[in-house]
Image (cartoon, rainbow, N blue to C red; front, side, top):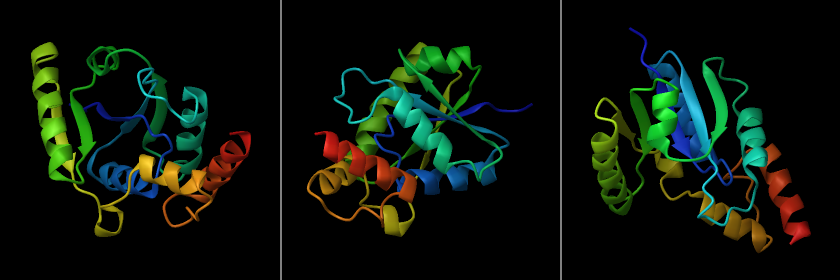
Length: 161
């Protein structure tokens, strides 16, 4: 039996930390679906289409990874994709508490949906999309945190602001 695996997130933008988790997951599972959430309640810097494009571009080296945008509830998307496993990254104990609560909610809504938690590699333990956006908006160098394609998009967005 093949398990449909989803790595969901807003990816605003996708960082080297996200990519690290996806690469590691791609070695554990036959196929990973990177699900880019519309997240209308969040004030994202990039549109859903831009975020899907950026994630697709920086993940082309992984043959068993697909990127897809979605809106609505993650459990509904997981059901639609016939997924039974979510991958979630945990950097801090705050992340754990938040994700633990979500996992329990997901179990209530879709009992066969399990979650696997991965911790980041040490060099990415501090990294978040929020930090990357802040550094970029203030003219800082984000080249250690994102791929060049993403850095280019951040610079373009900064000019538009």
